[in-house]
Amino acid sequence: MVDLSIILAGLTDALTLNNLLFVFCGVALGQFVGAIPGIGPIMAMAIAIPFTFGLDPLLAIAFLVGVNKGGLVGGAIPAVLINTPGTPDAAATALDGYPLTKQGKPLKATKMALFSSISGDTVSDIVLITVAAPLAILALRMGPVEIMALMILAFAVLSGLVGNSMLKGMIAACIGLLLATVGADPEHATPRMIFGYYQLYDGLPLASVAIGILAISEILRRMSLSHGAVRGAIEVQKSDDPNNNRVTFAEFWDCRYTLLRGSVIGTILGALPGIGSTAAAFMSYAMAKARSKNPESFGKGNLHGIAASESANSAVMGANLIPLLTLGIPGSVGAALIVSAFMIHGIQPGPLLFQNQGRLIYGLFGAMIMANVVNLCLGQLGLRLWIKVVSAPESLIFSAALLMCIVGVSMASGGLFGVAIMLLFAALGYILASLGFSLVILIIAFFLGEQFERSLSQTLAITSGDLTRVIEHPVAVALLVMAVAAVIWFMAKGKDSFETGETSIED
Image (tube, rainbow, N blue to C red; front, side, top):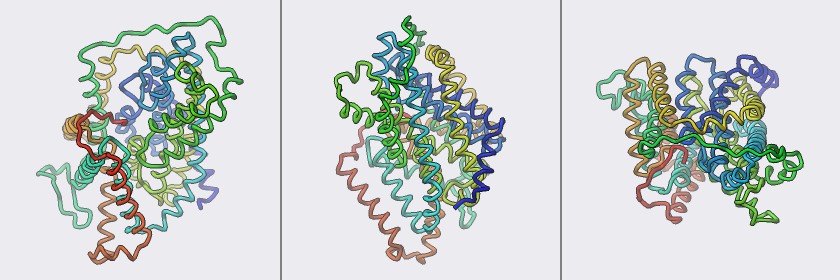
């Protein structure tokens, strides 16, 4: 276990004015971009990563976590006001939030979304803090063979859960692993697929690949759907009745079981790589409706519907870090971006984090709790401001985002070569998304590629090149059997079609 002195030192690092400032800025940025349909916290995190290069690791990661948490709150605002979710996981919130807006109760709906989001997020953070260290100790008992088998299982499960096609998911994972092999061979240091560009000797730049595939390709996709139209400002009805502009304690307490149920669902699903917050939100909403004494009131402005959706989708955020911090396997795009931030600062995610970087991890835990408090306070103060954000013209937002992407990647990669790589991967991401391939799986496989190759090499060395000797490792055999069973099960469920279709970065 981690020493108490390290835990206290990490929490002390989190409770500094510097860290509070970066958490505040991250939450504010997250709420801002979350409130703008089509942007979202994932794109903001991808753009922000290069700008955190010169920061202390705790400040950088706390800032990104703040962006992610703030985006969960901001995404509910356009869902409630204009029936257009700022993030995909807020789609279930719109089912009851928008009817409340049409009844002249937009502030009541947005405040309920805020309180529910903070409640679910806090529950999942508490679970993360309590279970992460014991799970990391368990993970340390796994050798290279078991780690390789675990990663194969993760790729199989992700391929089946994310997107509409199992085969496309597997192809996307293979593309990500292939991209990870660019650069020097870790075993013999011989260059591979650098095509004469010495800049690729250390591999493809993380910032260029992540921002190109996640941010630029999504901007191009959104712009192609706008057809040149500029979205105008909206007007929100105002009510003179103070009860329509607030959530009373009695109303919040009445939703306590709905909030707890949504938090548990989000935490459990968030700990499983690939399921995502959108599925958690709709599952919690459906269960709340099934358990309700008045199910016919759902979809007509029921506060329980908002509570169920927001508590579940926010609980996923903290739980997503459980497989990341304990096994080094990101469970979502947001977690994958946090992996890249760790790696940019020379930190390898995985079970050794608690042994080698215990102070940093508990500093991160402290920053997450701090971000929840900031999210609540800033949300209370800024709801009226964020309501105005939804009227911002997309042309202004997208042009500013493109400029920040170019500047950020140029700074992180040390020149225009990284920008060229970014634009190349933007085109690749746009094409793959248009064909229905999952960008989530591709990015996660790219981030895990180096570790997977290392584990595979060590496995071959341990088995003397005879992979049949894997049977000497019963845990690895069990994981591989589970991977094969997952592929067969998802194939049987019909997730193997090759129909084309657009895929968002947050699907």
